[in-house]
Image (cartoon, rainbow, N blue to C red; front, side, top):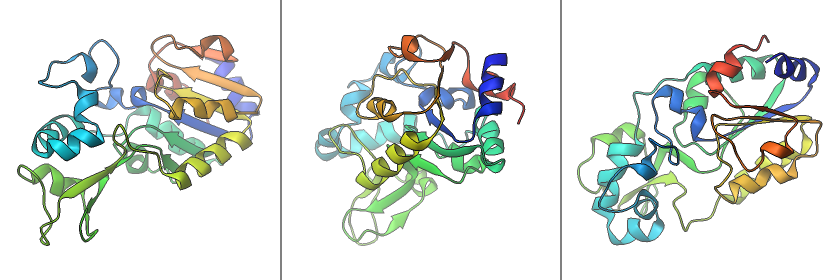
Length: 236
């Protein structure tokens, strides 16, 4: 922990790259851990349900899973989210690049957040493009539809769909220009997002994750612990 505090103290430009492990302390399940979504039992594997082709072919079944497992609207920001807000307010944290779709960084108060996989809080009619919030989706029945008759789709990146180019460019620019990159709560197995860290050219590469990752040996500092517990000990 002293090493992380020293890195924070000497950094002028920090970028935080976070995955599902950042939100598990808020009660949102991740995907690949022992108790994650991929190890729970459904009629279809979660990665199949959360694909563009399944959304198209089995829309009602998609929404049954989506409302049950992806809309965690009662979740609150945890210690990690709060500390990142403090770092941003002090001018140290320049950007958050997140794979999460829960919007907890913004709920905590973070301003410069790049959501690689979209957000459950943005939904749009596929016909007229009218916008809807997450509460509307949660309270909808069967297939949520607009008053125009169009199907409402979450603004989240499903399997088989590409990431938003504008978001990619902003995220890569932030990572390329920071002196410290903190990678947290991610197994670094989901591409293309996991490949973003190759663009880091700074001084300090820090990894905070409960389990080992393929990047452990390449980092300047590795901490195997809960993200919120680690960041909460940082003095800003």
